[in-house]
Image 1 (tube, rainbow, N blue to C red):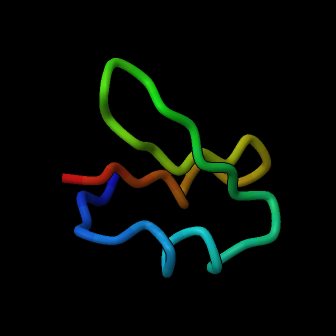
Image 2: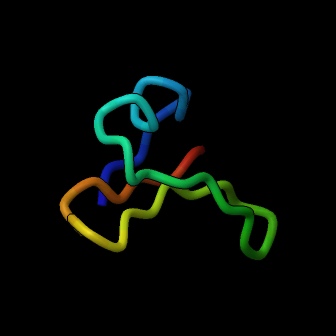
Length: 41
C-alpha cells in the first residue's frame, strides 16, 4: 500500500479503483487488482 498526499492520481491508475473513507482515512481500493491500494495522509 502506498501512502500519498493526493489520491487523485492514484484513482486514475486503473478503472476499477474506488475511493472509500474508513476510520477518518481515505483509501483507494481495487478488488480486481489489489496492487493499486493507497492511503492518504
